[in-house]
Image (cartoon, rainbow, N blue to C red; front, side, top):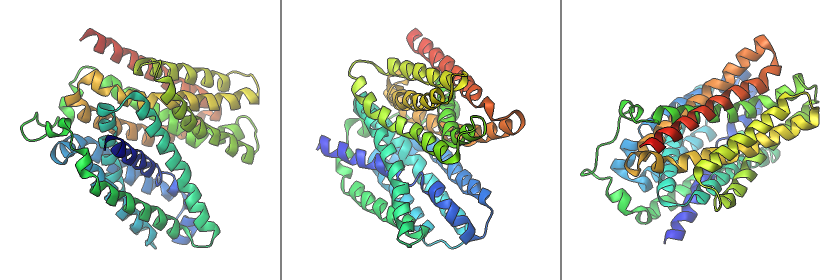
Amino acid sequence: MFSLLLAIIYLSFISLGLPDSLLGSAWPIMYPELGVPMSWSGIIFMIIAVGTVISSLNSDRLTRKLGTGRVTAISVAMTAAALLGFSFSRSFLSLCFWAIPYGLGAGSVDAALNNYVALHYASRHMSWLHCMWGVGTSAGPLIMGAALTRGAGWNAGYRIIGLIQILLSLCLFLSLSLWKTRAEADAGPEAAPPLSLRQVLAIPGAGAVMLCFFCYCAIEQTVGLWASSYLVKARLVDEITAARLASLFFLGITGGRAISGFVTYKLNDRQMIRLGFGIIGIGVLLVLLPLGDVCAFVGLIAVGLGCAPVYPSIIHSTPANFGAERSQAVIGVQMASAYVGTSLMPPLFGWLAARLGLRIFPLYLLALLVLMTLMHEKLCRIVDAQ
């Protein structure tokens, strides 16, 4: 039964990634049909981001009341409904409306599943599960591309992903009995009440881990959005080659997480995080220093490989750092800070690059890496002192 539940959780992580890259891959076709400016995709993205932040901050309350299994099943069902809503939408306002349940569902399931895995499974499973998220994000555009190639339109792409989510939601509802663990039974009314945001922030080290998560997601999203532009404008690489090379960053993350699962047999979470920071630093320096374009390409791949163990290891170490009874609340706040970093820092880089030039790209990444490293080491000192 335990193995069956783990398989369901793996499928859930693939499901988490499936819709994440759909909007970006389909938007060039969507916005002319909808009759809106190309930049309006940012509005939908922000609505989704706000929803994920709200639901992440409330994940502790929801999980204590309903349990991880129910929160996951309901959240996936909400996401499925939202994707089907997208598939039947014919206006921009309709997309904005369905973006609300999409964001709320995505944030809840992300925080709940990550905490459950951190509490009940070894570190290697956290790495491999996040590798499965990468598989989902890679498969989403492929499904959308197949729908577009067959002339079915972007609506059909969303509909296919929505139907897949419905099937997963049914599997989750049928598997609810597998989620009943002693840890969840202890999270009932007789247990400690859920923590508010103010109470979480008062926990020693919580602010440091929030900033660490904020910086990590800022690095990941900034590289994802701006690496290709940097190669074209600052390195004078042609657009097609730049797009292909920039995609290697995401392959580095996905492949790196598959490898990281095996490395965790030898290294603990703290060592994995520091290893990731070191590889990111090497990658950023290869991009920064005037060593030629090949070194810059290798540097981008190295940044992806370095990012691979950081996110899963920070999450997996949360119960050890803050206690199992507080981990859901802390992970929820971590998720919220991650979404804030994802939403704010890439646009901030764009604003700075418009004034200072795209050559600041590696310096921007280096500044975020330094802050992230300092916050992680501060967290380690606080945990060791307790």
